[in-house]
Length: 147
Image 1 (cartoon, rainbow, N blue to C red):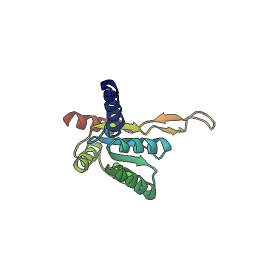
Image 2 (tube, one colour; image 1 turned 180 degrees about the vertical axis):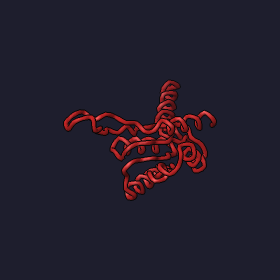
Image 3 (cartoon, rainbow, N blue to C red; image 1 turned 30 degrees about the vertical axis):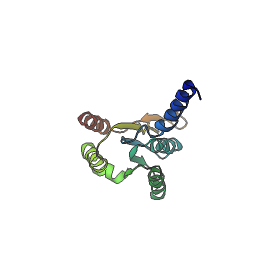
Image 4 (tube, one colour; image 1 turned 135 degrees about the vertical axis):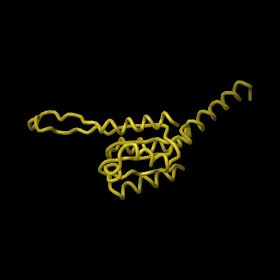
């Protein structure tokens, strides 16, 4: 085998193995509704080695358990934040709890925009997008600055 072929083989191995665990040691806070997009993102993050803190609206306990098992099967950890915890704690305390459970926080992905029909809009009109309280995002960014 020539030196060039050896180098190409080495490069292929590096690119085929390393990218799978690119996020090893990273903690991702993922917020969203129970959708196929969220599920796909969780799977991809776990396969790349990320540990995940998940705040998901309208997810059954059974589904959450299946997600936890799938993340663990990929070698990761999942910290599930239940909606009651989100509503009971202020944003800073919730982030402190995530950091206490996961060690740190590296990445924040918010897919939680929800279509909501307002009283001013009549039936058949286009619903508006509403985003979660800014205080939560602000608490996440402040924590990420400190780590």
